Length: 352
Length: 165
Image: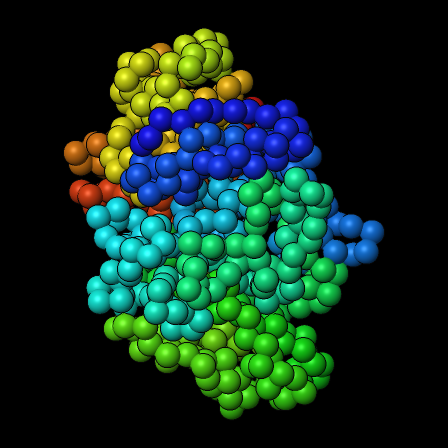
């Protein structure tokens, strides 16, 4: 780890003022940043510890019916929050399907949005990576790439965004509240992360010094609470990133889909909203044929970036299955294995 | 750079000079304060051997900067028993063979204490296994660990009910 200076600002304004300087980085829980620093991947000159900033840890229902979640709310506190988890069960399920209990107790809302890709070539400083070192090349292209992107990738970068949390959030039209040197702004989550293009080092729309202060969910997002699921394929049962995941939220009227909200995870460098597939489902009966057609449309533009053509068919199947689970209804109690494709009926164990 | 870290460690108020901001809570415990019960396995948040309770919640000490623990309460495996009287989770790990080599055990026990306090798993072994998935055991003592967590939790609940009655 490189040497760095450590600053604990007393106000958001003080944090932003320090955060504008080149080489500075905001530190919340540090569960991703410290890992990157230990590997020499991130080498900030100044760490700005924002964990003591006032007013960034609230979970509130706004007068307009939407919810505002402070940037420093810990993942587990949000997932178990009685109001939030009832209104947004797929978001709670996605949170609880991610990482481990220890990490969820530390990791923050904003940190989850801003976590870096887990591409092994990004983490290995001996490998070429355009994201870590612009212009260096991409060793993932001819490397171990069965987990890499199938949507929105570029010849310069085939990495994926690893978040579970962001997948149902982007489906439900979440937005990000940002404070910066020139004031505050709100950006839809769908526009917050960038696709790699020719500049994969630019990961979000944040400018130097800008600080995520809150996450917003619109009032309409709670209208899907009765039929919302998150489903995730992992290479082991728990404590692993998604190979592919899907968030499916439905509003049903008499067995007919009035509105659908769909997104995929693990397929691109951002959480992937599937708007055209949502349109396919609107007004359709809730059946396998409609789900399969929606899945075809959702993956219509997908193409393998390496040894990962299987992810396209896997994503279709996971989306169909997530839609089936969402149509069946949000379970009263969080499943024992949140988001798991191996989840058993309540009370039965997967393991003897 | 010199800073003073002031925090409560295993019930005792401590003031420690921090001469390097890179020191993690794990290294502070092991290398500066000689509390080597908390183990360094992967040092990257993947194995759970460094699990401690920070303000009552289980976290990975290897991914926590020491300086960020100013004013915090930290509980490590050394602070769990009352003298020679083992904590119910410790006793249950012995009773149920919840370990073989023992390297992951302090982290497993602290994680189990955190899981029981969180109160989300109930008496469902599947939920206990899921809730303990951040602690790897290369000896594969998982069956004993799950049994130990369930028994310790039942005993702690009985104690709580007894105190309330």
